[in-house]
Image (tube, rainbow over all chains, first blue to last red; front, side, top):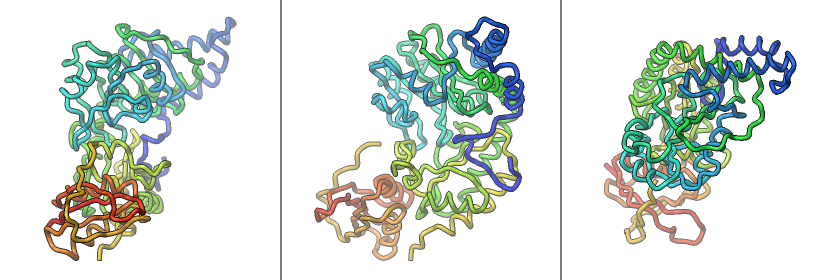
Length: 348
Length: 88
């Protein structure tokens, strides 16, 4: 990571961690062959990808034959919802889930569903989707309470993107994630089922063996260091959350202050064009994302922010890479007031 | 997010046309209206920006204003009128 810029958009993309990078390099030498082939090189590749699958299965607590590598997080989600006709989902689930027109369960101002409301909606469906946390705001959902109330009546689809490897997962029926969120490579997704869930094994191409190996190594490194990662990143985002109202006026820090992932903070500023603010921060060597309408391809605000009823204009989404330094956060907080002032509309 | 209440029966004291303006301008116009007019005055901000639907109610919540709902604009040039009772 450059020491002159603060890169704070890990939920869009982040470099692999060292373990993933090293594993990738080694696997490029040994894992390039087709694992379906019977000869030595193919068997070597097969061993590597099977070992990668086993490693990941062990971390998430699954059987390896119920763990699938997909092209990315989005396609894992798409596979998880395919063929399910009656779905319920929180209003803040990923757009891939919302695309199949589930019964939506609204969220409160913090972005959380009401447990009873979700259970009630789920009961009349075949599958209910409730993510571990929003990757836009970091806010966690009451999955354990929902599971307890449902008592196995309906399987739960748990989108655990940017949560696998970082936090202890609640019990799940169908699990989905993207490897980049845990420090693995981009272009590797994860789809896993519990034996108790009825599912058709997806017809999938073989994953890239080197990428699968890198994903497994990356997950192991993050998982084994998750306590330190959580402590360090949570204190950084806590500092951001508590500093913001003092640095900038007319600001709304969104999402739950405690029930959240350690590395994500979202805030919105009144009288500010979100796209202009992202540009202004980039000019000051800070990379962040935004949920504002003006920054979206379809010019609609983030459906997550909209569902929460929070301010969507002038929104900044900060997501810290897992190796984020104090200096990066210092830099961001130092330049933010000037960046906002540079783009804030004057009221008089 | 639930639909906004219907404010067609509310008496509007000032109309503010911000159609063609994109975020944050409609909300800025509302904040300016607060400075110009007194507390309790009912204004309608007419906007066609995608963010206004969310951000005008959010501004009301942040500033202690009453968001009274939505209604069609007076003319036929499109957009939505967001009706607000200004705060102190």
